[in-house]
Length: 118
Image (cartoon, rainbow, N blue to C red; front, side, top):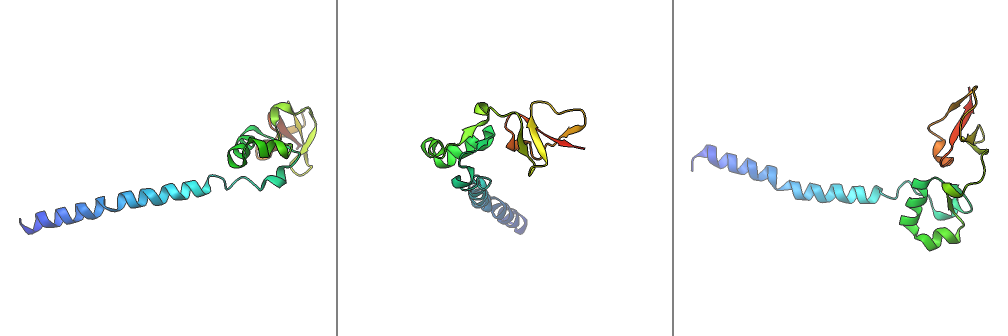
């Protein structure tokens, strides 16, 4: 083999070998970050949370533990005017004319919108 063919084989090998190793590292990082957004279960005790948070809690801690801490999903919420955005807004089905829909804090309202004054 000439020198050019040997270098091509060497460089191709160096490009292909790290791929499975990098794939394992990336998968492990994604697995570690999966439950990073879920606080300890005691922080949610007695609360009504949005559906994605509820499903994440059930996946992380199990249905029995979530039921034991009296955590409910948004569909069982009976309150139309619960506070949101650190008591600067209200959870409502629709915002009034002088209010705006705060997208950042709406996840605490479940199926309602976090309405804040302009």
